[in-house]
Image (cartoon, rainbow, N blue to C red):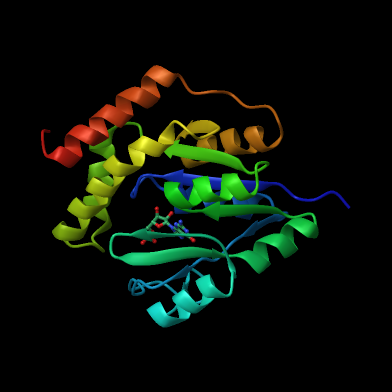
Amino acid sequence: MNKGKLLVISGFSGVGKGTVVNYLKEHDDNYKISVSVTTRNPRENEIDGMHYHFITNEQFEKMIEENKLLEYAGYVDHYYGTPKEFVERSLDQGNDVILEIETKGALQVKENKPDAILIFILPPSAEELKNRLVGRQTETEKVICERLKKAAEETDNIDKYDYYVLNDEVDKCAQHIENIKNNNPQSLDMDFVNQIKSEVLMFAKGDK
Ligand code: 5GP
């Protein structure tokens, strides 16, 4: 049996990665979505084991020690990581696996698994991104600022991604990702990618 493909999907907080990933899964049941472990608290509508495995710092550190994580990173005061066993097993069974993770972790995955396909989802504009973060109403203003700052830090790693995909409509964004997986990628104009990068940097500095 052929091994599945590993898709690593990243994007600034608020860009709608989760919605795109759910759409992909709903339309193609060969996908398996990796459920990460995290030390952050669950949001109101999040379910343990479905959105994340919510664990303690001690449990997380034990997983690091026992080499049970494919990658991990710190993000706004908390740890996030990908359990290795689920990913390996699913790929061996021929399933395509999606990791929805931030950029430092994504680059670790690429180092360990050079065949992994790194995809970065971009918003139509930085303004739209900020509106989505504020509109979510699950975060305090302090957390929103931290997430924008984090987005600015993440701009450094974007250049190392294999593909960039625009999320203005979820079905188009998902189709674009399907095309990439099926070796028929369209590429986004790099001028646009660089423009969004500089807008996000300006927002995070509070210049806009
Ligand atoms: P949130 O707290 O909004 O659920 O996630 C914050 C960030 O952590 C997002 O960029 C998300 O993609 C990333 N993230 C979620 N799970 C993992 C993981 O297992 N590893 C890494 N490196 N990042 C993750």
